[in-house]
Each structure stands twice: as C-alpha cells, then as structure tokens.
Length: 391
Image 1: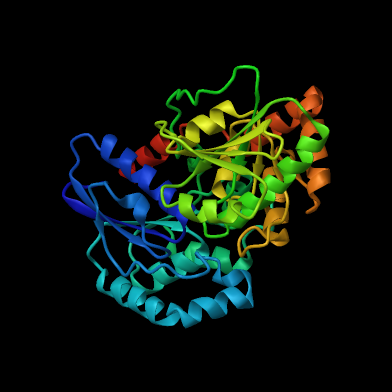
Image 2: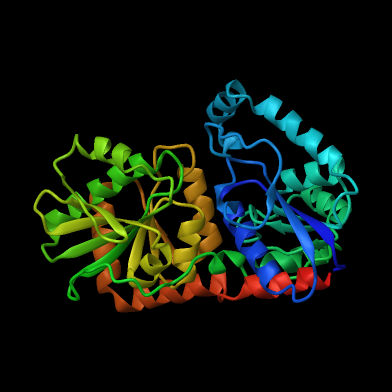
C-alpha cells in the first residue's frame, strides 16, 4: 500500500462495526512507516464502535427500528420504511458516488448487498469480508458470487469451507481465520464471586430485544432453581448502550430482587426468588465473561459465535424479537455445529438441558472442541491487516 493514501471502510451492522474497528486498530499498529488516513462509513446504526479511533466518520448515521434486520420480516421492513429507510439509502448512495477516486482501497465488511452498492456506485479496489454467509449454512447464491467476482479484488471469508467454495467459482479468496475471535479483550478481571459457585454466562444480544431476552433467561433460571439447589452465578455481559433503568423496569414485574452495585464492572445484581441464583450485570468485561463462564445461555449473534470459539458451548432457543427468531437460531446452529445446543422454547426443558450439559463431561468436551474448530484460533486480525497493507 502506498504512503499518504486514504482507505474507506464500509460496514453494515453492529458486529461488522466491531470487526471493522479492530481491523482499523491493527492497520494503524502494523503500518510501520506507511502514512494513510481512514474514513469509515457505517451503513447501519450510529457507528459508535468507531468512536475514539483516529478516523473520519462519513455518511448519515441513522438508527432504524429493525437494527439492520429489515430483510428478516415484512414487519421489520415496514417499520424501517416508515422511519426513513429509503431516504437514508438514497443519501448513502449519493455519498458513495462522491467517494469515487478518493480512496486507494475500500474495505467492505458485511453482506453482498453492501458490496453491490459500494462496487456499483463507488467502484475501485475493494477488499470484501463477507460476514453474513457461510457454506456451513446455505452458502452464497450464484448471483452473489458473480457480484463478488465483478466488484471484489480480494475476498476474505469467515471460514475455510466458504473460501474453498469461492475459489472453485473463480473468486480471489483467502482465509486467515475468523476476525470475530480477536474482537474482545481478556483483562483478568475479578468479579468478586465465590470460588465454589458454578459460573454460567448469559448473552442477551445487543439490540432492544435484549431486555425481553433477559426475562426469558430469568424464567429458565427460575425453573433451574426448582431442580438444582446449589449456588449459581450468572454473568451477563452487556454493551455500553445497555439501559439499567429499562432492565429494572422489566424486572420490577417479576419476583426477583434488584441490588444496585458500586463495583468497577458489576453494576446490578438480580437475585432469584429463592436467592441462590444471582445474575450479575457486567459492563466492559465481555472478554472476561467469555473466559470465566463454563457455558452460556445465548440469544445473540456475534457474541454466541465468540463464546463457541472460546470452547464454551452455548444453549440457545428462539426469542420473541426481530433478531433471534427460530430461523436465525437454526441457521446459527448449522453455522456453529455442535458448539450450539438449540432447544425448543420450553423453559423447564432448557433448565434440564443446562444441568445435563454441566454433568456430562464427555458431551461437554465434544461440544467445546467442535466450537473451537468451527471458529478457529485468535490472531486473525493481525494477519489480515498485514495482508491488506501488502495488497
């Protein structure tokens, strides 16, 4: 890559923004004497993950009701249309057109839709990181592969199986690992828990449905309390925009007790009706929750994948919101294989399933190894950043 040039990073989703921001950090760290500027263009949401980076944020940042899942249902699409989806898209296209010839390279992180818009309206040298599809699920359609072949100079998919399929189609594809596994930090935090307690992680997701998901998890724990009397600590890693007040308003209608905390990372504790199950609401400690919990209850996208990649099996079940419906959960199960245990939405059965997985060492090891194999080792971000710098 030549000196004093500009790079544009386009992403379309919360998980994609996280991947992009970590890739940008690595580009700066590994650039040595090369000088370049980076602009970021978040297509979905407000792009908060880029805050604090030495980048310029361009384009309208609009938070739409579906949170980037307009194509999941007619209802989601209709809500986004009423909130200005079309006008926002036209503004984004206008900015892409103006960006022609301004950047030496463009890095697109997301699905083929965002690659098509970037390639058609902006063009130029595009490095594409497809995050939305994998050959473990349905794979890319012929039309999508044609778009990659036409607009992407280099494609860096999320797994080896997808890379092999793209190469067979004549696409310039390479695989160095899944960047999601480098998008968290383990800080060796002390959450002040009892050594003898069983630690289970909870991943409620990052969108507005996370609060209803938390209530579902609490119902599972209530069932667990009826069949298991030993002490459990549930560690819930939440994003920076998570509202304690909104969660408290939801919990108020339950039989759980709420305790506000003044600890460095734990801001709230929720005590189950009998008091021997505690949910710790933890800010800025996601990596340590992944590290310390033995397994997870999860209704998240990227976070579920990262937990599985750490060798921590994830028990999932369909939620009631726009993101984690049955179709999404089933696709994630196919993507992550035995790293995920997908169950029906029956809270008592889920509680029994959790106990069985904790007590069956052979089954636990099988699921742990399967998850790590699907996601790959950590360290891909540095390798990919070096490849981009040399491209």
